[in-house]
Image 1 (cartoon, rainbow, N blue to C red):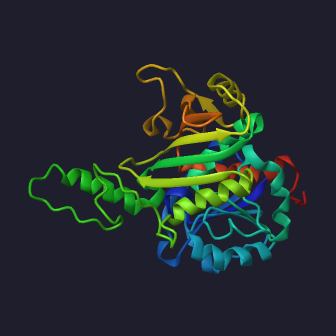
Image 2 (tube, rainbow, N blue to C red):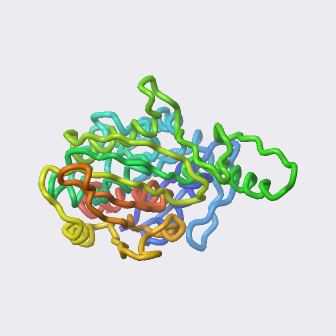
Image 3 (cartoon, rainbow, N blue to C red):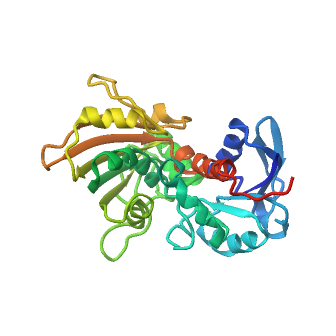
Length: 342
């Protein structure tokens, strides 16, 4: 059996990655349509060896389409996802528009697959923030083993999380560093990103946290456990692809680094690369293009009782966005939750 798929926002970083992953994983696609705004009509994108020309979202008829993978931003999703869902098409949305809606499941298949059944309330499923996705994949097996009480996470987020313009800005600023006398003017970011770190991702909120930090805290609770205390500091770094996280975890029960390694090695979606030697850990460059969430530097946190420290790395365009969305669609098929006439 094959399925009709539409990818909205197909010209963006995540949209292109969705098309690539659908092809890589041999999702049973019968018909696929690339959609974007009117200004991108006719722009060509790749699906495996095929080339698709983007069509206009505003005029496309979603009747008979099984899945819509939405990666066009929150405002577009707020307007279009309910309309698309009303046509009987399941929307898997990558924006933050629906993540905190009680009637919309927020899903990471390795973590809370059972919650996907709730999609029928609105026919919409939310994809989490890219930093949250890799965090909860690593935390889930540890929570089951020793019950997490508190998480302190500092992120090192690549510029691809802010879109193609952000990647272009890092590239142009990096080249500009080697041109004597050339001024560097930030556009996408509030300060220079080349050879720099910016402790500011998304907008600031009244309590001093940024919205990106709030997303991580709220989403971890919704996906994993509302009882877990979470605090985050999100930092943009001059890396093109791949988010990294330094994570301190406090548990209710004793847990050793070796017990954590064993649990993580056995967990879906996790790969442990943790040799206590030079180079015995993962970096974002090595994680780029990979599906796994990598965990390194697993060690005791001696400042708290029952504490561990972890280093977590993942490709933010894949597990943090496109791959997770495709895995959600696969989950629906595997659990036979999509009713489709033969």
